[in-house]
Amino acid sequence: NSDLLPIGLPPTAQKGSFISLALGLAIFQYSLSTSITAENTQRVREDMKGTLIGMEHCMFSAARVATPAIGIGVLNAYGMGGLYATCSSIFVGTFLLWTVTVERFLPNLPPSDVKDR
Image (cartoon, rainbow, N blue to C red):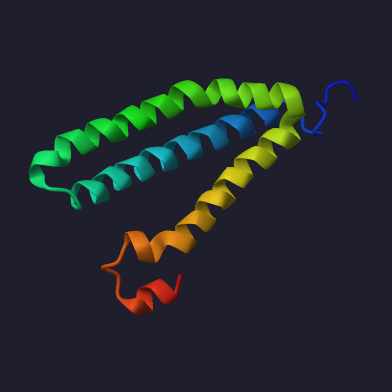
């Protein structure tokens, strides 16, 4: 059927699923960055909070500027499968890095909390 795109969904369903997924990720990313900022500001001296917030916002902005071009490059070079594989690899790598280093960066956690993760 020529009305279906390669993944087998009608164009309207593809657009709707993309918009829903993008909206969900945007909401999650906003709350995640807010939580990161809130947690980090509690861990620095009072006179360094402005510097920390400025650095975090700079990194968030740099990610918003650079990642679309990288994503388009991966999409053009490797297609949707490559883009999905790249994104999931980043998420898995971040999760593994977190689980390996959580004790080093959060030494104030009780040992039972760290073992449960």
